[in-house]
Length: 475
Image (cartoon, rainbow, N blue to C red; front, side):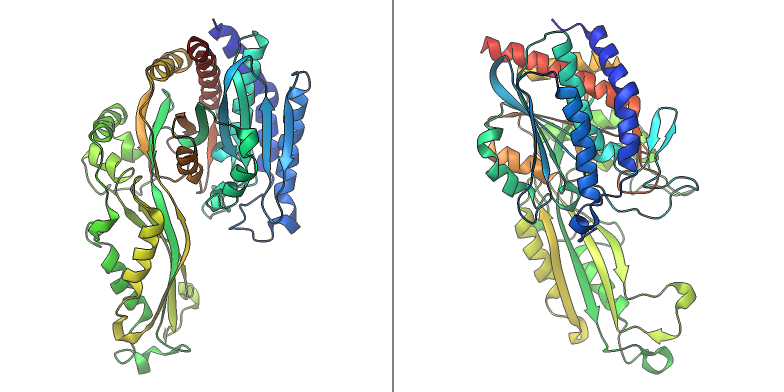
């Protein structure tokens, strides 16, 4: 039996003495994902981050007999770190995370910044600590805590990629290339998700898919005087609004085409209702609304379902519009918008992307030049039912680590790796969790890692791996 207090002490000391200082170094590295830094290889920041992770892990594994660590590099692709720890029982476990980062974003508080690590109380500010730099450290601290007590575990493979924030487009090549080394895990643990609060363990039951692309509307070859042209030449911005209205009801935010919806399973509705009850108004108060702003509805369960199972559109970037201070009386030649369409977990993302392009490009208003370029599509994921042993283990782990029962809820983001693994390992059990809780603001300004939650998640991993070993032996 695992000594949970001894495990807690081991994990906490490892985090305090080694992991947090290493994450401080990591945050300083601007290793943006390749979609945001096409010259990532030449800049060298991704290699710098990989080397930092590699040095730490090699030092920790130096005394672990049979453990191996490889930085695998396929031509013209971001690298992956593959760590293999032999086990004492049959079977294997795959633990997943990533180390590439989102771009800077504006709006950081003065004195804070994406590459400026700042430790304040329980929070480590800076890009990438929570999303998802902590994952390798959390996984290895859990495994080393088990070995410290001679607690058996299955063979564990830790896979850290460097392309997740770009849609993991490099990862399928590595999964195929490393198929023999990855084996067929009976348990997959993903540490790249969120948590509804910092008071209990949160398990992700589903992930939305995504279709992302750039919509361009061109009405002129060059800008012209608005006093001369307005009323004769249609505004490219107005045409853009017309096209978006084909997709989204601007009054409610509801997506119009029925083909972009999926039936929500009854058990997911029930879990959403319980999650909403556990969170209360924190479902929406976690967001930095300006004074007086309200969410799209007061129904908390509907808010949970909106962000986990229903399609939603976000315009995430614009081009063709000068800054207001630089804007003269000119009717602009074009408007370009980056669209991010979140999709239900069970919807075919590739088919949705094709449908989206057809919807936006058909029957161009005024025969304007319309082009929608699909940048990427990511499949969603709906978790398989938990085996009784795993459900019991998670309940026990949450009580031991957090002093509260676990909660189950879908996440609105996308982790393409989960859908890929779900297809490749249909018999595997999945534990998808993370540390991105209220105000942690992944991808945005003032992102932070809540360190106590990360330590507790490490403790949960240790307990689950110990329970997995017991279950595997019994089987």
